[in-house]
Image 1 (cartoon, each protein chain N blue to C red):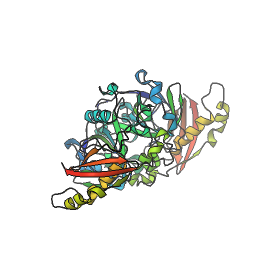
Image 2: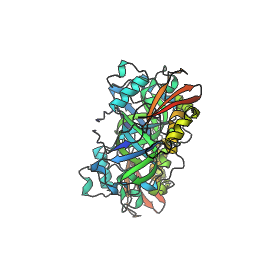
Image 3: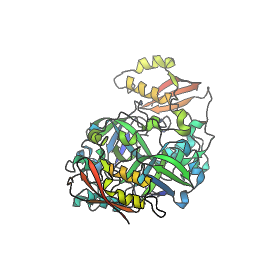
Image 4: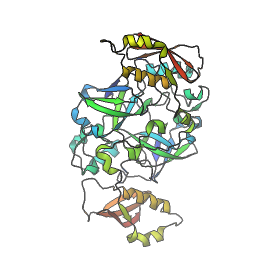
Amino acid sequence: MTLKVIAYARNGHTDKFGIPRQSRDESPIRTRIVFEPDYRIPEALRGIEGFSHLWLLWGFSEVQTLQTADAEGLQAEHAGLSWSPTVRPPRLGGNKRMGVFATRSPFRPNPIGMSSVRLLKVENGDLIVCGADLLDGTPIYDIKPYLSFSDSHEDAKNGFAEEQKDYRLEVQWSKVESLMSREWFENDSRMTREWVGEVTYILSQDPRPGYQDDPEREYKLDYGGFTVSFVVQGPTVIVKNIEKK
Amino acid sequence: MTLKVIAYARNGHTDKFGIPRQSRDESPIRTRIVFEPDYRIPEALRGIEGFSHLWLLWGFSEVQTLQTADAEGLQAEHAGLSWSPTVRPPRLGGNKRMGVFATRSPFRPNPIGMSSVRLLKVENGDLIVCGADLLDGTPIYDIKPYLSFSDSHEDAKNGFAEEQKDYRLEVQWSKVESLMSREWFENDSRMTREWVGEVTYILSQDPRPGYQDDPEREYKLDYGGFTVSFVVQGPTVIVKNIEKK
């Protein structure tokens, strides 16, 4: 089967680094689903606003896959974008290997991702959704309604991923407060309370590669037109600087 | 993107008629996921048994799509397997049109289906799962772990599909009890208590095309080597006959 791109995701995640590894209901990250001309048909969305959640089926791009390989410190076996029977999930410290079908890794025989998202609204023929763990520009192959009686298994056992469930870091902005008050709500600024909420969420999800734990190491996150520098010390993310891109 | 078939589903659903329209946790239908030689690698399943549920991404076959079109009384617009911006969901009586992206209809730009299933066990390199709404022989493109913290939205609003949630028919076997006791547990028989449980579930889900409601009309369901004849009178399915195929 050959897949046709029906839409592209548009959001502030212009760089792979920092994209939450799974979609979550609490995520404030907004994504606009922009349909391609052949699929931009108002009737094709009739009835969709009655659903609170949707499924997106999307493609891991080559760039995204290679950047992930780099960020996760993966070896040459992945450089050709071929799949591998085992992968090293970042939240297991990057040194335990699990079967690819027991993970959501992009290094799969068919690199399709799936994410459940909250539908906020239909706007000018686009869908505005919240909670997608997608890179800006991600191709979308399908959109389906979320059906709770079929798709929801509240008590499902999450195997080795169980510890991800409640994993969160605390985020401290105190070191950049003066920068923020200077930028905040300026006329041409995209740094708003919403932006801060989004970046707080992204940082709380711990964007570091799984095998790294160096409290001195400074990371840079590009999001929504700004570059945020931060370090991670124990369970705390300390934001060190914010620059316009 | 071109998808490679990694496995095929094997179960008693040798005919499209009767396949439940959505997977459900309560479904007793067992399906064996048989990997293709290139993907039949024990390590690729390492860690999978810690998960209670899995996602299957699979393909609507052409035959399945055409049979559905026929069963749903769809028009020529679908005969070429092209997608349509609107479809007529069977549970809405088959006469209201909804946007294709607000439905799980097979008549999509990319005819991929997704189903969450319970993982029963790994057996000789195959996965044995329960609850899949799949035709025997359905191609599988991906298998992923179900992550409750990402995938479960117990209170999601189901739009116009809400009424499907608790829709069940009662199933009466009394007319065929003598046939069943004759066949039941015979040496070469596939008609076991499990088979009866599976067929009871299938019939309770109402396999009729959505627009039909004729209490005299007799339907035939092929499942697991037997053909079951039944009528539907109000909220009750009455099994009229069972024959070996």
